[in-house]
Amino acid sequence: MRHFWTLGICALGSLFWQCTDEAQQVQPATQGQRGEACQARNDCQQGLACILGVCSKNDFELTSSAKHCDRVDCQVDSDCCGNRPKEAPAKCDNRASICQTPSLPGCITTSCTSSESCGAGSCPTGTCNNSGSSCTSNTDCADPCVEGVCAVSQLSCSTDLDCYQGTCSIRYCSCSNPDYNPSDPICSDPDCTNLCNLKCSDERCVQDNSCKSDADCPLAALSICSGGSCVECVENDDCEADEGEECRNNVCKKPCVANEQCPLFHSCRDGDCVETGCQSDRECVLAANMGGQDQGSSNQDARLSKCLPSNEDPLIKTCKVPCENDGACASEFQICDAGYCRFIGCDTDDECRGYLGIANETETEARPFISRAVCRP
Image 1 (cartoon, helix red, strand yellow):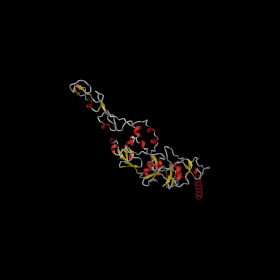
Image 2 (cartoon, one colour; image 1 turned 180 degrees about the vertical axis):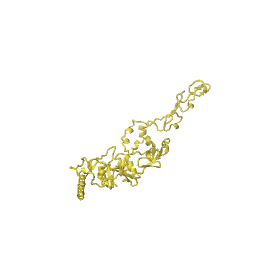
Image 3 (cartoon, helix red, strand yellow; image 1 turned 135 degrees about the vertical axis):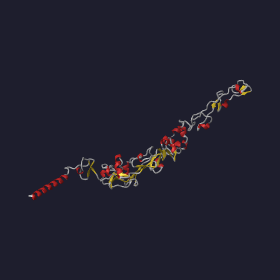
Image 4 (cartoon, helix red, strand yellow; image 1 turned 180 degrees about the horizontal axis):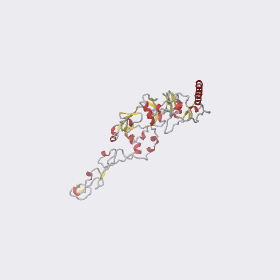
């Protein structure tokens, strides 16, 4: 009897485990196509995965290239200007003084006794109050008694004291620019205005802010000409020392004293914030709260983060979240390569044209150059 009970229990157990196993392998009657809603992987057709509640393709037939795309405008300054000249002809040399400078630079309308105190201006003569003649001092307004007659007033006299000794009026610096004439034809001459103000910097055409003197630096924040460029400062005295500012790389700023004054993954070194990258996996996990992931997956747990060498600079580590398939990468321009999301790269210049959107390029007056797409290591 005990033997039959044992067989019965075994039979029931076998039936139970078989039913449980079959229940776990139940497939949906109709599996979702791409773009349809899902809750689990097996809700989707073969080749699709359930990503963020939608059946999506999770692996693409793409390989990653070690090359990247660059936009190239120029190699030398002349590439940025087309037929437009960078320098004005000689006839325009005095144009700024004629058209834009009503007052002489460095001159202030104050009282003066000689032109030396008026900078670029002059100290004109005054007027004697007894004769109306020009003068430079009271001595020029004297009225001496000559043979019983005052030389200026023609009154009778016995001494100079009987004559009216005049005074010279107060003289003021004259700061008006004698060349200033905004109606001069040179002020509207296109040869002086239709100039190219672009230069080639790192293969890109950018605004040319070069200078020869401080006068070429009109912006208050960049008013000093140093090394051919308009900068904020060249020494600490150019900055607000009372506020603790120092001149660092031609910029006035307070030096840092702690890492907390710098962005994430930067450290304070000798008063400057420098990029040092992540130092540990734990730092990456905790920094995910502030968006500290450099290249990660769109739907992965931040606790999977690893501090690994970046693709751009192997000497600086960055936080990466591992991926299992291409669909897990946040960007449509990334694939899962060797367990981590990375840019698919390029093999040809034409591939970069599409990525950079360089198409239908035309030269214009403001942009007299054509950008090119280049795929390079």
